[in-house]
Image 1 (cartoon, rainbow, N blue to C red):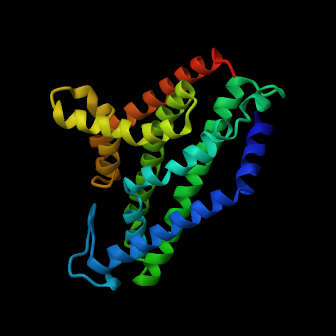
Image 2: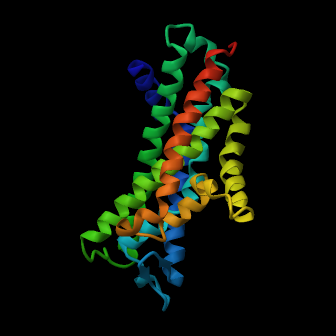
Image 3: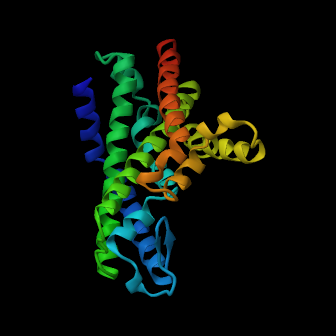
Length: 253
């Protein structure tokens, strides 16, 4: 499986479409930081209200970039990493040269998880540099770093959970486009269901979109308010990957 993971990472590193997509995403991040800096922002415990580019800081820019938009920034990765073999029709070639189905599925998801983490790190770095250039670094105390780490880990976990639904749909339908749509509409459906059915308490464990928004409204000291979505994300991640493996195991190539 390690050889397969290395080969897949090498394939991505040589992909022009991957780097073009990442460049566009980082450009959008810079534009978002500049836009928020020009009008003032209100996020978490940090409030800027009087307007002006000088109000943006490096640390605030990171917090601005850690938003629900990361869900949409992850969509190209679903196609470029998880669904690449289905798109190119090379799935059978890989499986027949000695890569087992479990190694393929979990290796693919590990590559996706690694690239997703690196993408979020790049977004944080770019937004920090842009925010610092616009204003100042904006460092106050250690709690800022604790909160940003809390945001980062939370977003990675929730995004991996939503992506696991895409994996399951991909192996059920063998269609990359449908799996991308699932990444968008499944979290949306859970969010609508939670609003429409407030008495169904279990939905707070599945409201991934609401969870992404709630994370940036809390801090590391009060993270208990979003514990349900953390637990729901872990359970969903494990169950979807296991279900996808069962489907893939019985699937004809």
